[in-house]
Amino acid sequence: MLPLRRRCFAEALGTFALVFAGCGAIVVQSATGALTHVGVALTWGLVVLVLVYTLGDRSGANLNPAVTLGLALARRFPWNEVLPYIGSQVVGAFAASALLLILFPDDLTLGATLPRGSAWQSFVLEIILTWFLMLAVLCITRGAANKGITVGLVAGAIIGLEALFAGPITGASMNPARSLAPAVVSGTVSAVWIYLTAPILGSLLAVPTCRAISEPGCCTAAEGTCP
Image (cartoon, rainbow, N blue to C red; front, side, top):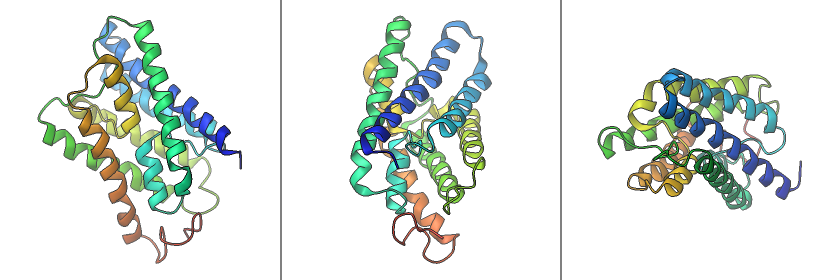
């Protein structure tokens, strides 16, 4: 295993790429209309797929504070590394948003997630979206082999799928760092509380769900020993 500082750098780099590509696609779509909603959703799914394969064996490619917290609660990740990982993810996200601001200074939101309807509607949807994402992550990473190529394909597919059907309503964040950075950099912070709290709640709810559908002892044994 790499030293913590190298893994944190990988997390920062990966989250930078995630936000730059995903939010960048939203900015480009807003400016040109060339990508369409489907293209934006595919961008999110594909960048996750690429990053899982690129960084998965280096940092685990969490790229998401909600995922890091969920893995820690499930005893798949050490609690003493949670804050360094989350800090690295936030730094990477802010770096990407700052670069997007330099490149597209006229864009008003920089890809920030904003509810189309009521705050309550988006809050509930974000909980469900992140619950499903985290449940899939927990299920497909069970065991030492992590099911090889399946992890990247499934993670990318879930992100793309949820962005396809929920993106027009909530922005389909599922990631506090991804939402916080463009909101702060663009100054559109009125709804950011939704995207800081709902993904974390959804991720934490996925852990008991995984236990309920798995063998006894799953996500309760020592770190890394889920059967």
